[in-house]
Amino acid sequence: MSDIVIPGFKSSQLIAELNKSFEAFSPEEKAKLLKQVNGVFQFTIKNKEGKEENFIVDCKKGGKASRGKGSVKPDAVLVLKDGDFVALATGKLNGQKAYMTGKFKVKGQIMLAMKLDSVFKTIKLPSAKL
Image (cartoon, rainbow, N blue to C red):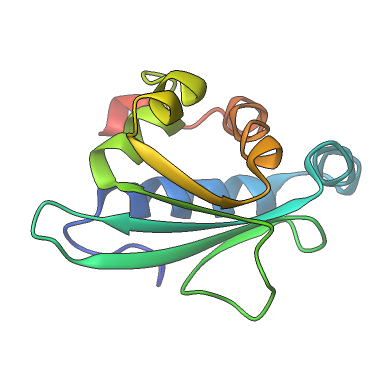
């Protein structure tokens, strides 16, 4: 089990899958994604029990995902519920609509948050496992 996966957080499984995808990219694929997105995202996710966890998705220099707040200052911090993250990452929830209806909040570069859709589509997260 990855150190990213946390019981009670379905989103952590997707973050772990995201990290595996980053590791599997060729140097060219990774460079293309990093150039396209050029940002560090922090996700503050709350589960059904009210517990909170932080995850970092670095699409600026490292091209990796990890648990915790990380050492790099995020360009955008997204605060959302576990189920909403899963729906967003698997394409079942439109990011703009979710933001406009208050399903998640963004601190920092809101326009960067709009690039998340391209990150999730590039990675092709397995929605069937959830």
